[in-house]
Image (tube, rainbow, N blue to C red; front, side, top):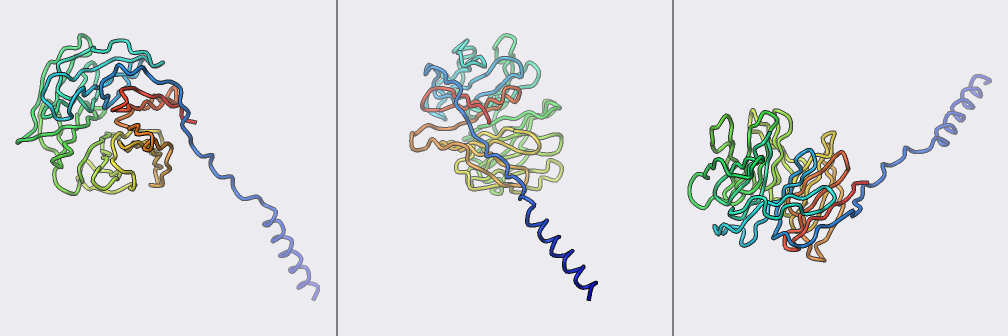
Length: 288
């Protein structure tokens, strides 16, 4: 009887201790705080790319998204939002996505990929899409210099490797690919606009897996770190997607009709730089 009483007291005390233990604290919600906005001399800015030092490259469509009119151009902007050279390189056709490797800036130019020398702003080489009506959109460059390019009207992903230009993937399962991001040596992230999803491709097997969906017209994809990503919906939303596929909406400017195009993230300053497309500006947000 005494033993039973002792055990009962011990169990009761244990329950009491468990009850007094506070639940683990929930992570603080991430938020975006506006830091600066450029003036509106940009012309339909579709993408922005940080050079890793002090400059932001901005691709300006300046016209229709598929027009071969030569009115598109690349601007350079400082990290505090000052437009340093509005027409650093001009004569392009509705430039969109960009990728940088050493001193080579790769830019989509409707039906072709253009390589620009960043030391002088001159185009050095081009590669054409296969077949008619190519609509090349985003660009990403892997650490080894391999370039991947999306064609989101024709469900294709191109690869430029060791100067060989080819269709790397094609078919409906990539669901109108827009944004691209090379991750390490073996993975490619795809923003599939048809299903509003962030998908992952194993580069060795070409196996596709979905990480998250429900994100509208997926556009820019940038790494936040530890397998997490920022993803923009061209219509005006920005999401943070965790490595486990959970996501949270960080901003929604759809009601104000402010787009969120192909963005970039300056990790050392925790700045997310977003092109507003029709509003002709860049907006920088501090990630908190």
